[in-house]
Length: 397
Image 1 (cartoon, rainbow, N blue to C red):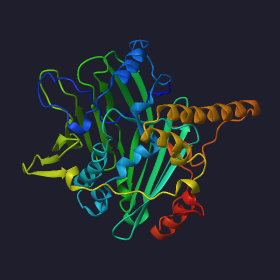
Image 2: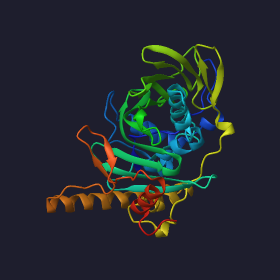
Image 3: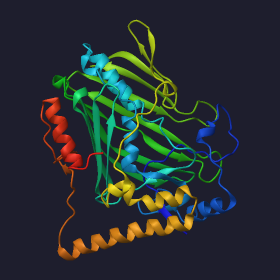
């Protein structure tokens, strides 16, 4: 029986059961475990202890989303139109809201049912390109730069649109009894290259909770607070991702106050899975920030799998992905075991040689932030050429 590690991002999830009160999760968030699957889950859970670190605990392959965490991060680049042109806004408040819109728009992209992406192996990377309707392009690359603790570093840039995004993801999961919590350490850093006076916009992440593992409704919730801040302009916002109470509340709700210095200037409301709104506190005017039903997801362009490098996400996990899509759990077991065996062998060889793993695309700063190993020229055309060659070499799709 194959089991895959539990730590990391979960997709939307719910096991069919009665809901005590309030609105129910959507059908797209619902999955039904058959008797055998339920027995496997319960057998595993019986071995866990409250507060247990789940970084080395494994979970069945039927809960896997067929893609790597490194590709999962691209969900936050799904709606570039929200932030393209933000540098042209004269008011710092409007630029800040546009960046906040970009970040909040990424959470609605989720698989059906109880799913989580693959945990990347050390040295794994994912790269893609975006071709926009205005003739410009965006480039993304992510790499697993650490295994213990797990750290995924990523970088996105669209030189012609004046946008650069970087960051790192450091998930830490624990068993809480009837739920699993994933603390999402790390941050997003957004830089509007045509507004250098703004500096970087820093955004932390909410935490994730897979509820109802033992009884009741099994569903993903985002909880706690995500903080967005820009020190240069004095703009900030603490967005509360509200978890549903047993007798009251609603699923997927968010709320927060936008501040300039110590003054509240606006209010965020709505649901991260549906419409989100911004209310100007001075005028009382309320406007829609984002509605996923009106915003198609931007497609990615990747090299064909047979042209990818061996440690490139889609090629590395191709046999596991195929087995999961075919519901071949034995094949999934063998495919995953093969990748893990190769990783252990590589780690053993490094130990024998007395060498440490060196990330290919990223380097760690003294403050713990991971940045790309590239100097990006200021000129957009030159920058695009340099970035393209750095990411793709001679093999850009």
